[in-house]
Length: 76
Image (cartoon, rainbow, N blue to C red):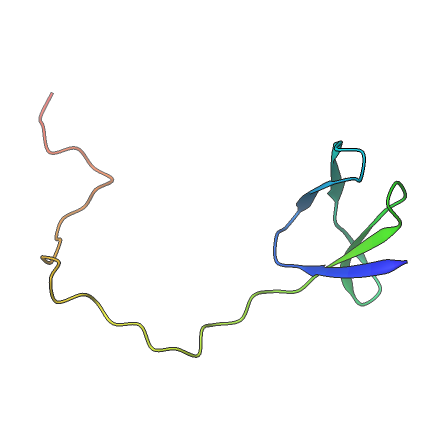
């Protein structure tokens, strides 16, 4: 059985050799969230993504954006 580590949760979509796209749902089992696809004999194991080790800075070319985008500015 092949083991694949994934960062998607809770459903994994993958393609079988015959071109069929299959979805499997990760379930909590011993050692974390796992799913087994019987069609392709693959075990999917969820691993939470880690933070990037590269520092990311705001672009000096973009203007600062202020405001609350969730509320409307018009009075109806």
